[in-house]
Length: 226
Image 1 (tube, rainbow, N blue to C red):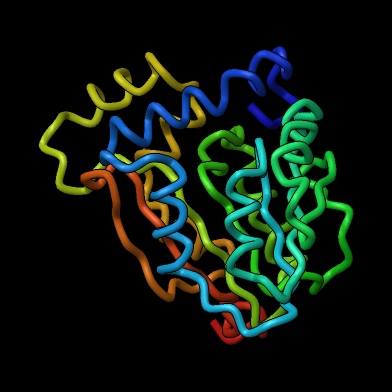
Image 2: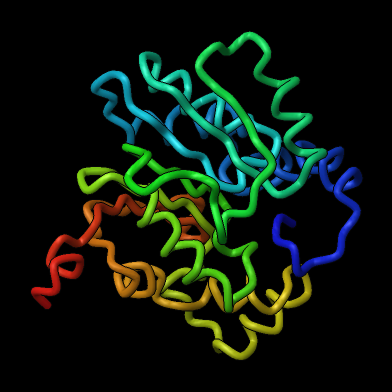
């Protein structure tokens, strides 16, 4: 978990993270984590060269490394609140020259306005306490350039689910905290758009239990036209 309000042993999380996520990928879709991320990022990324890229809540840096392979002429920065995760990320990407990592809080990032062409949030927003998600999205919008893109990949309760929502919520609470369960059940597109973004493209994976969204900054909101 990557937010200050949660007390957790960072070293234990860092050591178990790769094993747990790797197992979930195979269970959810039959592809390994590496194979899925290779396909996923290729679908959503079109690099033009020299982009500045931010990977929030980057964990062990494996996703950051895939970003770096797609933005070969650019520079990718991974940020995570967990110092042990950052140590793993640095070790995992020793041979990758266009990445760097730092310990940081995504609710108050130490970057100037308009710093990045592309921001990646991979399985990150559901981990953030409900009251802080809007703060994080506001920070992302601040550091993103006017022509930049935000890519979000996260868990989502399938829209066509016939299960009672109360049952779904309490089932999710068995494996996730309240903030995560609630984020998986909301209209994520509407929620993110309400923070000043505009959807460009979306796609569901793993039988609808994960979803990807590509956003741009909604300039009509930024300019006060709405």
